[in-house]
Image 1: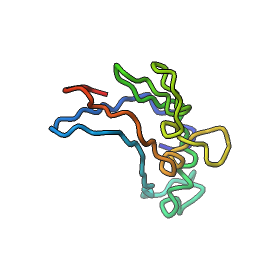
Image 2: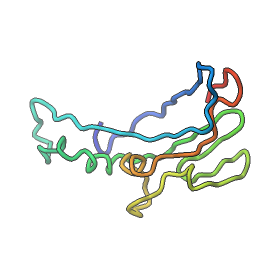
Image 3: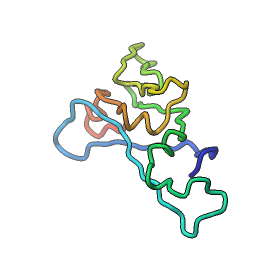
Image 4: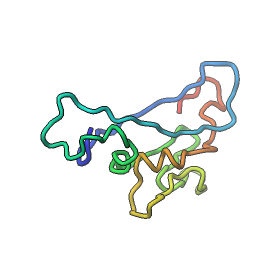
Length: 125
């Protein structure tokens, strides 16, 4: 993956297989950059692996939703289309005010206090 590439939309499903019900859900990210060997001529920064945050600032998130039968939260706006609620905890903030949300910003500002994915037995979110 590199700046300019588009990644296909994918899904991650959450389900509690244990016996303890959670109160809330938190989503964050972490990342690393691995230096290629041998290095390609197109690599303008041979030390990218030493500062992965700079690479992550170029990785823009264009869509992120958290949903099940009870919630449909747009994580770029914090708005739940089912309840009409909007919460700052449910939104990744644009830390550098460039109008984009990057992986770096999700790392800085994790989504917290999302509704639990397992209020009902065997519920998938």
